[in-house]
Image (cartoon, rainbow, N blue to C red; front, side, top):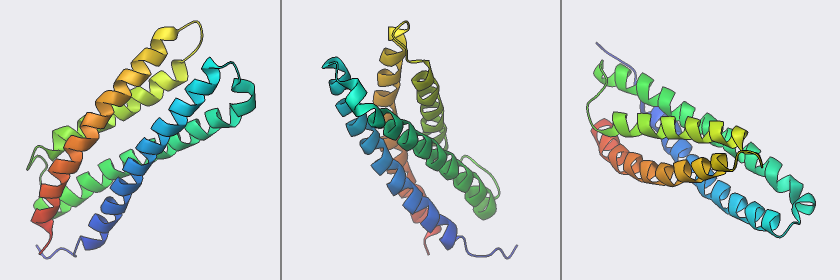
Length: 146
């Protein structure tokens, strides 16, 4: 079958992954700073940090789901099947951790202190997942480049 080049798709994926990693670290910085302000009981001055954190989180979820879609479409278009490397399970793990982290973020409340603990734990696991998906993604990209 004579398929068109998927180079444009891989460029979008590369940019999306770079943006996702940038968003992840931005979320960590904003989250830590907001938490410090809350512990100092000055949260009402920094309420905009909460909205910034939510906005960055929504963007992060969007880019992770975009990467999932690009990966599925690109792999099916190039190979015809999925599962050619350990990048698929690593990517699905990152998607799962991202969605779980986003869900726990909506559950954080003074009456549910365990939700914050879960949110932080999931984000630490997400760091490991992002490292794994980046390493495995590099080997996958080498298959597509001429």
